[in-house]
Image (tube, rainbow, N blue to C red; front, top):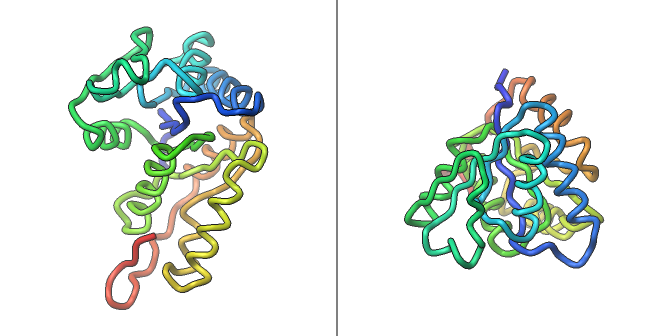
Length: 200
């Protein structure tokens, strides 16, 4: 049984076009704080990143922000977080976010959010970790990504068992109960593929 002490949230440095995205980020932040679960995120003060971080702090929770120095201006480094780490590279940022988190939640976001999510899925497929990965599919935002992942499997570039690497929910208030359930159950590793592991 894995402990759920901190959750890494991947999300956009913009708020997106739909108010539902910001509402989901705010609900998620409040629910993490209410359950005593820390937030680990990219350290910015703008977009959904800023919304979720402020929501956690306003509800009395703990926020760890991790941002590369060269993004301090572009992503408006959020100095009010509980614990701020300024690192040199994106690789350091992603590794530290991984190290500090017990699970991953993906809110709507752009190319960077996609890249972080796919990397965590790839690491899980290669059995580098067994931490839950949860797609918060607000207003169907991640439905095209799920369809693409299904297509990857259907075309023979990944085994059907990779479907166990991610979970999809639609309501932010269901995130914490879902993660607690996932952390509480033992996770069977993927069987090695003939000729070595595949990547997504």
